[in-house]
Amino acid sequence: MAVSILLSALAMSAIVALRYVLASGGFALATRLRHRNLYTGLDPQIRREIGWSLLSALIYGIPAGVVAWGWQQHGWTRIYTDIGDYPLWYVPVSILAYLFAHDSWFYWTHRWMHRPALFRAAHAVHHASRPPTAWAAMSFHPWEALTGAIVIPALVFLIPVHVAALGLVLTIMTVMGVSNHMGWEMFPRWLVRGPAGAWLITATHHQRHHDQYNCNYGLYFRFWDRLCGTDKGLGQFKRL
Image (cartoon, rainbow, N blue to C red; front, side):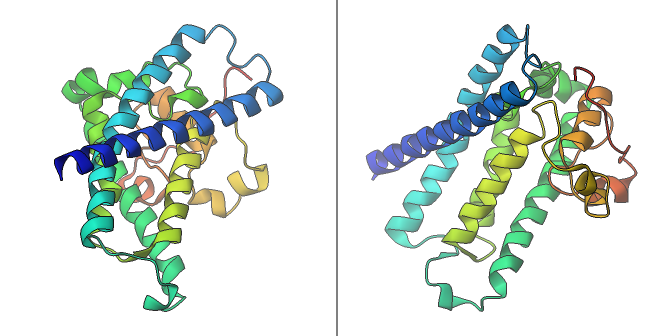
């Protein structure tokens, strides 16, 4: 049993690492095509970002692999595969529930990580990326990576979710994590500065966090930032 769990954890870590390389590499390529010189002179920083991110992939994969083993071997978790197990309207509701729960956890742990002692001990690794690049999405100190690694594995024990809906949640998590750090805005102006952009986080909003540190802590939504008075609006991209 121990060997099976270990193999599952290692396999999941490899999957997370591959997902990171493909997603960050894809957005880095898009950056090169759209803004050719944006990452010029940042090669040493990018190498550090990749190193920390691959270590984070290992940490993310361990709880995910244990949970995947328990689900496959013993039916643990509330992941379901038969779409008829719940009404169809529940599928988008479950996706929103996962995103909101993840966003809430991220907001409060992120603010916690900005306390001076924790920032110096862990979160400074992420903010060492000045400016952040597409490779910085998972560039975390191991202690910070651990706080992020436990969220989705915990939620699958609490909130029923179809396996395809869970896959979509993970895809959104990956895309938003990478695109929010790549140094330019991929979403159209009408979305970013329109009614939807007033509640959704994109690269323009997250850029202000990397500029000022004490605001814009959210991941997907601006709800907690607005409620807690930490929303300082949209940022600017200095290198464009």
